[in-house]
Image (cartoon, rainbow, N blue to C red):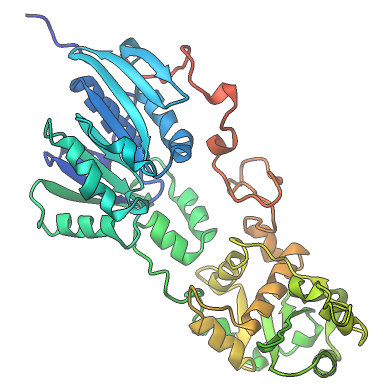
Length: 458
């Protein structure tokens, strides 16, 4: 009798991955946080199935760009060289010759529903399942497994929707043949606790809970969930606050209220909002009078007056901008930093602080700002007083007025690595943080070649 051919794939499964691998369930649904090992395990699971059961095997993801950046390198790493017939990097397809016959691994986009119909699959791995259409599984993908009673691995970080519903039902034992699995970044033994703590401190609370701890976060909730009683101070706590460097942030409203705040930087770097001004229906002259009155005796550098960038547009009727009108009263505002995804992130990180204390606090003399921090919700208009606070804090970070700014990953329009041991510097204006392989995507050195060494294969 001929001895069976054995392949050793280059992966050592950790405890949570072994739980999934040892399960006999046909449908395995994994709610795993980022860096928990789901992508690497999914690649291993797909290659293992393609070798042991010859036929057509699919990986479906929300788009092919994500596959190229995050999945494809892991799949190539797992492939036993002696099985490879052809690798098509353009269409993300792999052709194998296995002991049981020809086998194929095709990567598919969930955006192209018509291309996902009518195929008899031997296995199916769906990743980032929370982000695909709710009807795709029941109406399209489930049927592709019927011919061979093929297994499916469904993985994702959580979002409220069909994926979480399927996971909940499987966890409760309401779906025969299904089993639910859960893992967080802490379940990956190959990432040090020190590294995890660095990631946690650099990540907003809601993002940390959703992406790394695999907990559903309701996006209709308050934006600044980090704001609590520690974030509020009594004026007597800082008797010398008038001597601290101060930034005045303003958001001028025509129909909405105009919001103005005074942000001071304490010697330890903590940002302190000491006073607020919020009025509706006033013209520039009345606001300017009040702002100048409140600013007397404070340590305000001429460059530390910041106004919503929108207020620098000229009014066609007068030929002047709001900023120009303020300048007539001696208030020369700088333009605010009006970024998109990052614009709230700085505030969230400062408000969150660390285990000892927040890095940004609000005086009891600012009731409207306190209320805005406590009640502003996703999807609703940002209160003007809160926008003014955001402009002031972003300005403090941009000008390095607080030493705390140097301890946090930079988000002032440039992307920086969160790895403190890596070279630091701007990557590209206006870009968000990218993993190394995503930045290098498309360079020949990172693509598959016949000299590719995955290691550990026999």
